[in-house]
Length: 375
Image 1: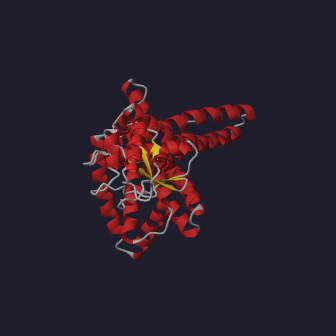
Image 2 (image 1 turned 90 degrees about the horizontal axis):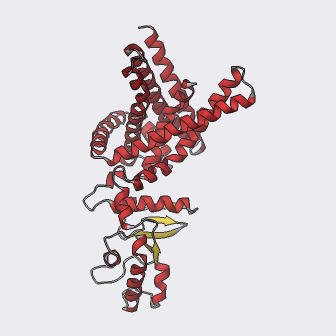
Image 3 (image 1 turned 180 degrees about the vertical axis):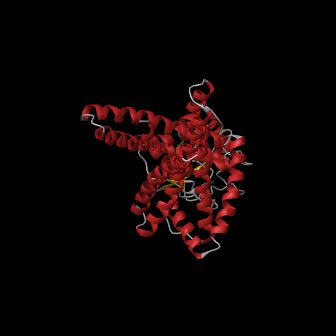
């Protein structure tokens, strides 16, 4: 049953990379301003979604005095400074006036009560234009889901906060991958003569095993991107991908393909430099995630090789086959998504990505096996 999961791991690496890009502003986690504010945005957005709220991360455009999050349509500005006084003061301009009218201010969980008292005092002092009732502070100051310390830890490698965040953001990916693998296992079991009960048991085991591996791969990738080595690797990969995309965009057909990939990833029509940027991030994420998937999946075979349970020749064949499957799945996902977006944006994007990812994974692995069998 080992091969059941192989056909989905290229697709898994692609959707895992997409989940990472959508849930983490990891490129800003170690910025000059400290980066914990961006981590706080990501962490609070996740917790609000888990609490049943509709959340949009809108602060990416860096608009002056613009909201960071839209929570159920309400604009929310996050302020996460070292103490409640500094957090609240950051909401006022050089003349001492409140600069986020019409927005709620989300503050660290552990600073909420003190920040609320400061806001009441500011209203009483006439520092909040259009607001005179000190009790209005209750509708302006919003308690965050994270403390200041937790926002600091969320951006760091291998802390309980960052690990918990990564598990929760990758859980849906793991469930999807486990489900697809279980379906393949069930179909194969029935074809091999197993009854419904035993086929279901086999599928259940495959769901647990493949889902757990997909979760481990996703968490490992997001942790890697928090590390200095990961950031350097991402920088190198970004430069290489950007050069490749520029070459592709030398032709009109190439530009159209990049635009469709960007539209599939971003969910809206984009072109020119914006499309190249989105596509660069998506492809970079796929490359890094695929590499992590391959590395994690290599551990069992490496152990077998070291203890003499696998020959060097078999080890080499296994690694080449798996690398081809993962790479084929990732490439197939991007190609299928572009085609699906061109045919029917939205539904076509999702279906195209899935079909392309699965077929690419199967084709890549099978093709490598055929080549290796001739050697």
